[in-house]
Every structure is written in C-alpha cells, then in structure tokens.
Length: 408
Picture (cartoon, rainbow, N blue to C red):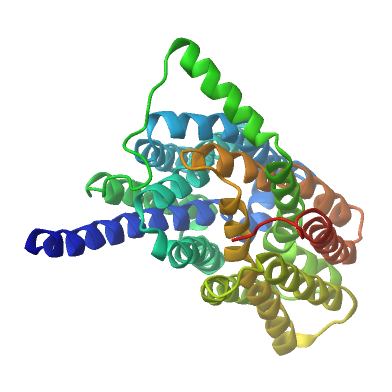
C-alpha cells in the first residue's frame, strides 16, 4: 500500500513533465508556422517578389508536410514518438536559421520545405505520447492544454517577431526564433517519461508481420470515419489559415488598416483562440455532442469573417470581432480532437492523427495561392468571404458526415 501511494505521485509528476515538454514542442510548432505572416511585407520587399511568389514558401511547407506526415505517423508508431519529436524540433530550428541567413529567395523557399518535413513529427508524436502515457481520466484536459499551447505559440509570434524585426531585422528575427526549437528539444531530451499505459512497448515488426501491419494500417486510414475527419481538417485548415496568414495584409488592402492595428487584431484572434481552447476542453469533458460544439464555433467564426468583409469596424470593434472569431474557433478544437480520438484504435494514434492532420497541410497547399491571387488581383474582400465559405463547408461535413457517429 505504501509503495503504491508513493508510486502514484511519482507517476503524476512524470506525466506532468511529459505534458509540459509536449506542450512546449507544440508551442514551437505553431510559432514556426507563423514566422512568415507578420513579416510578409518586409520579406517580400527584401526579395522583390510578389505575394504569389512569396506564398510559394507556404505552399512548399505544406506540400512536404502533406506528403510526409502519414509515413511519419507509421514511423512514430513503430520507432517511438519521443526521439522523432526531438529530431523534428532540431531540424526545424536549423531550417529556420538557414532561411534567415540565406540571400537567395529559392533557398528561402527550400528551407520552408525542410521546415515542412520537420513539422510532420509534431501531431503524430504529440498525440501518441499523450494518448499512450497519460491517464485516461486526464485526457480531455491534457488535449486542451496541448491545443492551447499551440495557440499560445501562434499568439505570441506576431508581436515577438515584429519586435525582433524592428530590433534586428527579419533575418535576425528568424535566427533568434531558431533558438526556441533548440530549447524545446533540450527540455524533452533531459527529462524522463512515464511508461506507456495502453501497450507495453513500440513493437518493431519484421518481414511479413511488417507488411501485414502496414496493410491493416492503411485499411484503417481509408475507412469512412477517418476519411470524413480528413475532409473536415482540410476545409478547417483553409478557413483558419486564411485568417492567420492573410488577416494583416487583407485588412491593409481593404481598409488601409495600419499594420500595427491589424497585427493587434491578429494577436487578439490568436490569444482568444488559446483561451477558447481551455474553455472548449472543459466543455468537451461535460458533453458527448462534440459535433454540435464544433459546428457552433465554426458558425461564429464564419459570421465574424463575413462582418469584417463588408464593414470597416474601426479599431476597437475590429479587435473585438477578431477576438470573438478566435474564441469561437478555439472552443471547437478540443471537440475536434475528441472526434478523431473516438474512432482511433489503441496503438494507432500516430498514424491516424498523422493522416487526419495531413488535411491541415492539404488545405495549406491550396489556400495560400488562392488568397494571394485575391490580393494580387485587387480583391481583398474575397479573402474574408472565402474564409466564411470554408466554415460553411466544414459545418456541412460535420452535420451530414458525422452526425450519426460516436463522438465520445
């Protein structure tokens, strides 16, 4: 009895350290995805390229991530998530540093492709570590912490990157940001981790066993519930990516909104997204109707985007509307994760979350080119209307595709 009582606090402490490390890594991943958005105008002017040309960096990032993330998910399930997560952090840091130091535009684009490869480890490794090594009774809360940490990374990126840009230029901002990933990798490398709860170890099948496991894994990924979640993530990515990456430049083109005010609106949106995730985690723990929560959040996000498209709100209302949009989308995210987890068998978290979250990158491949074309051809209002349309498609995907499925 005494040994059991002593083991429980030790287990809880090691779980908490693991959750902190995974959340730190997720913060870095979202921070790195937002390195271009606040500095878009400065980088574009430095290289002398168009919005469409510079958007190739985002497309390269998402193409590589989309192609590589599912194979990485299989790799994570076989080899283990922790070593993959540390390696991805170090690779992303190196690529960001080279992008900041290089004078060639095409090297810059190539380094964003390498960052896309590094980005593939985060969702498979994060969700595998949390699902396998954290107590089930804490799972909803821990998932909300994980998502919130990513939103915090996105929220602090615009302000901190602009501050560094004014101090040391955009190249210096990239170089300084590269240190963040190194710090997260060291944090994970120097800590222990609790043993897995749901299975004894990461098996390494060989020969016919490996081929059979791969075949079963692909049948799982191509099943209807998993494919429906993939489609949902694609359209969700196009909506969220439009606001996160193009809110600042679209507001400037549509209403001549000063960059400082536009970045404040973006920061408000991303900050309230993080707060919304915590509220959504508490809500997800008290309901099994996760599809209703997700749809309500998306509906409010689309309504806010439509309002911005047609009304010059002024400073205060603009920031408040953007913040409301972020809060609504944040509340939907823990329910989104629980929808995916509910259809995932034990031992398959890496491949399923890797495959489903590939939808974020598929959307990210297409969306930047669409939004950039709107801007290059003088249609900034279309950016916000397209975001609203994407939320409606996402809602219809949930209503008509998931309404009859188990979501808890």
